Image 1 (cartoon, rainbow, N blue to C red):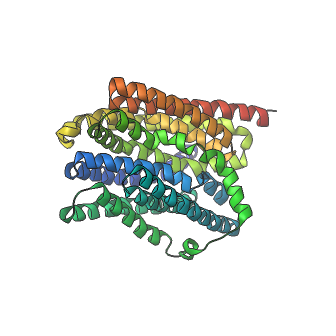
Image 2 (cartoon, helix red, strand yellow; image 1 turned 90 degrees about the vertical axis):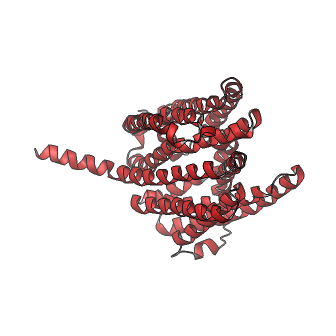
Image 3 (cartoon, helix red, strand yellow; image 1 turned 60 degrees about the horizontal axis):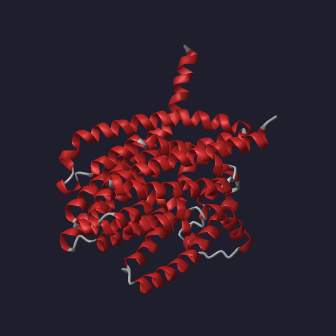
Length: 417
């Protein structure tokens, strides 16, 4: 009896952080869903397509501003002393500022040369704020402060939803208006997150040796930014080029609604990362066993959740989607069903990043992205926007397979008796 009670308590503690993350992520996803419903009803369909392209650029710029070294934050927090980590963070933020200024100049030149909208300059600011907020979020994750992490996320999306509703009453419901609201919201919550250490954002640490170390770590991962963009932004560029802007808007709407499942997977990743890092720190020799355990543990949970969301949405899609967006439901179904594939990738990549297998990450991302881009170009021509969603799922599966093969080879070389 004592053993059973102890097992139940252990199981509860094991899943307590995950439950908190999922609960908070569920609330944030609900608010995001309401935001999508507001946008697709109030914004002209072409403007929603423009917004989708702008936000896809943010998906490319954010890892660029992070110098490809975002994973190094969790590793430094886990392994270094408090003083050393604080210095690392200061140097990292200073490095991001320099990259931001270079990016801003480059975007301005490109927009002027190609006669593009200068709305893309605002995307650079949005990407910078997203990156700096993410740095603080890593600390919440590593310290297992799931409640604080969730409350900030919920507050951010809720504030932007309310502000969007109020502004759209008096101003045109345009991509520029929505993007400006997102930037303002992030700025407000960034100040709130750093209120007790705001000087960190204003200090410019020019430690060249540490900056070079960060760049060296992130260089292979930074090189993956463009290929990886196929999975979280480049798909919209392909859809927009092959099909028209209205089809792009429909695809983007389905992608945004399907991101409820992606949010769920991100929440699991937040729970997984500190747990895996702790286990690997104490027992590196069991890397494959640890990876297999978490693949089984979280893969089943992700699959059940994805299927449940697909069934629930199929019953409600006709009620909640405007008639011009009804085709978006098929994108949602595909993302829900393929959700467990993203979980496989998240678990394996967490382990490979811990061991610094960045070249492996680079090779697997480049090969998988090339496969996905080619497959997407073909399938979109034949199957429309559904082809893009299917291609992304298969691309993640291929990338997870490459990482697993590489991790197994690395373990055999370094940890075999």
